[in-house]
Image (tube, rainbow, N blue to C red; front, top):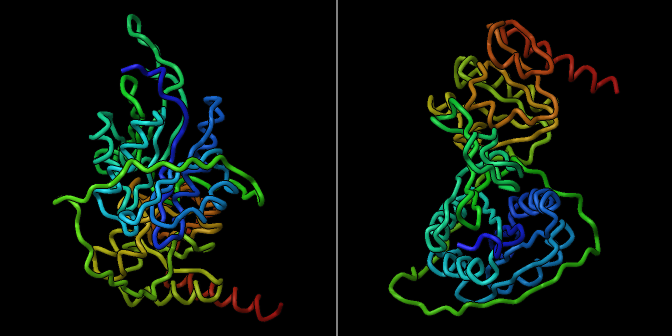
Length: 347
């Protein structure tokens, strides 16, 4: 493989119902950072039907180029035509790096495409950077520069692994939503738009979609919340979450939880924060009755301000918290909620 032929940072710009997913803009932002380190450009790959209008948004969030694959066969996500489209983009344009969101779509698409183009894939990454591999020089072994170092939780979240793909291209990764940050939007920014269509020949591998039924949920998306009041096993019971809901209501926040709470059946999985849940980055994160296992920290440690309440003063959550309160949440939360409501009333 001629590695020198592969240039540029490419991101899969996921869209659903002709609306860009948040992860698409997050990847463009991160791609911009990586491209700067490599002195190259970031290219968004936009796949769908009648999606050209989305190019403006991608350009304003930092894409230098946009490759548009527009075809009626791509109206809804289906594995075969989307995998064919992205694999052909890679084969024709030869990107050095290819990033895909670790969403339901991306987790299906990424591995299939990597297999088709004969490269590796690091899944569910939480950190990406350009560096040397091996990271520490080993006598007698070549150290390659400008490699994509892909970091992800491993062994059930008990350790963090940094992985590279030095001998094949592109270097591919799926990236967990909510971990990377969007760039500042620049209204009026322009990008070079390249229309590309590899052609689609439906066959027995093309699934036919008979009907799309959308479930309506009234559960708030915790990834969009500015303030999260999160509870763990230490809350004690499903009924005790009423204390957290009162606090969230008083402060204008949203309730979330740890995996232990979901496993106990106290809250829905949509509210779970952590390695096997959602990654959040609120302005304020209340960790109430949460011990602070590494699996949970992976989903919330980038919060701007972390406030921990736990009766165990040795709980690991206090190691990452900006403020910590040791005590009984059944006494602390009602008092805190009352003080917040009193302060709001006086203002």
